[in-house]
Image 1 (cartoon, helix red, strand yellow):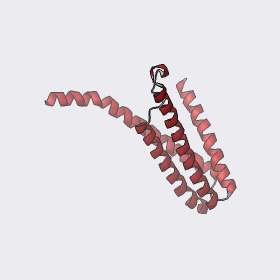
Image 2: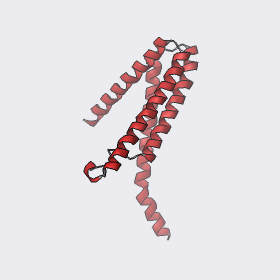
Image 3: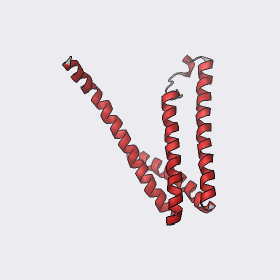
Image 4: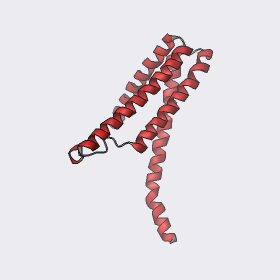
Length: 147
């Protein structure tokens, strides 16, 4: 019995290490993003006290939504052959994806309104522009790393 447990642990170890690397990479990206936003937004100390709690709350809600999506929804990326699915299954996949996008949009609107009511609109605009440029920069770095 001990040998079976040891073998099972050894087989599971690569998956555990992989998950930890992925989690570490995610934390690294988030730390880089926070630094990037601090630099681009140039918040006053008063604005920072308002912005960061709202931003962190938004990130938390979006993270929960992504986790829910991974747990509960089958995406087209996981369905290798659409032809093998019934029409009802395909329709369900599409509706699930649309529901996810709507929930994500609802979160964006909720926090846009919080930011807009708490900070100057130009600061909010800088935030949205910085979000977009960060995504492009991250994608560019990813592509360069793949070469």
